[in-house]
Image: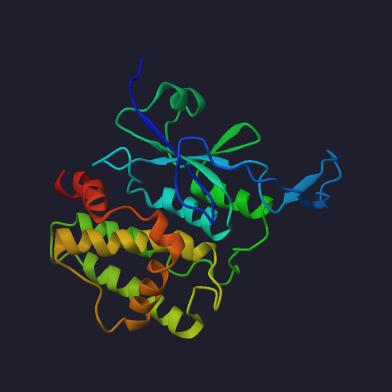
Length: 264
């Protein structure tokens, strides 16, 4: 029998953090009914403004303390989506070193983030955020297809540079090239990836840029070149949003999270 602790926290977009399960259940009314494109089987897809009760979501707990949000950028992406859509949610912090029995039974792969839809746990931040967009289309976050790939190679370039032990292997230049490309995109299309409004692409990239900034500063004594001022303004603008402030991990947890990949 596992003795792991799972911290359950309830959030709403307009209230303070509540411990336990005492959060107010928000009533909702279906906004519209859409008929699926396929005629068989004939099912109705209910589109709602808010869920009838807070959505249960499991994310990584901090390595330094199971009572704090952990350093998983994919977990933060899901929480950012919930915050930007103003959806109430019941947050469960999972200590991945001591996963509780109920979590592994419901989610055998043991991965985070996961969210419960229709009494079923759904994993993968890509899938989760798409389902949130489909089910709760108010405050839309969809990114236009022609802009969705902006910045998509930055994270892999960051990891390669962070793990590199050879200063001459070009991983730093690879990262700089990707950052320059994104800087040019924001210069032309900003302040956000798709223009004036924040979108799903920003919520996916933002946590990764935060990890990049914190981890490279600590492990490489490296920072984004000052010449990329459009990128730096974008990061400052994004990181200062209330949604980001509420869902970001502490810097020490980001550093601890990357240590095994850097130190070995």
